[in-house]
Length: 281
Image (cartoon, rainbow, N blue to C red; front, top):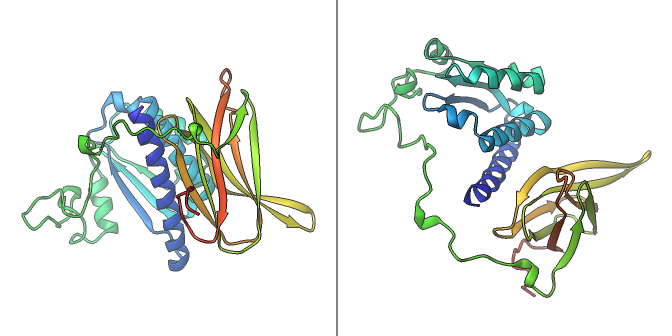
């Protein structure tokens, strides 16, 4: 269960980073990411992990569909030989406009490339540059934050909130291969659409749409792309600032399930101020 909660949290952080980066790119007028990923410690078990592959596919699809312009290059170094089959599969799925920005290297050849693009005094020593921490550490841990195990003091313990027990909650029942839409009319610009929802078990796909009226009818804009969320551990809360007047639609989608129906309990409101406390007056 902890892995499921972490996966949802990582996806939310990723979406926030992409949105922020897109805003920065618009101000600068050029791509802002020239990322370097070091696969030196990538084990075979991690490479074939279903959870890792799911996140990688989500990440790349989000890039390809909504934010392809923010990435200048992605340089992957110290790639093990067994990564080749995974990369070959990815190249066949995603557009060349995205994969042509990828540069894949084994143990050699990448240091010279990075030094051509990055000043040696800015490039960390472990990547072939001159920069180190004040104590001489070539890994530059004072400004490069690497992933690590979550300390146990941050674990959630005995704090489950059961939204479906509250009296003012709404309920939806979604059969397999089905989805339901809930629409809201926003009448004031810069209002906030806030939501909180929970399933009793398993996950559900969540989407937010905006329907814009045009001379040819209604045009649908995807504001939050489909994301699969497991809320059986705790409710999912979110908000969206509605800068336009019009129809906003929340979609709960169970199309991915072949066998299981889902009970979704939810609260939604429109407010002039951002506030997650649904019990506030």
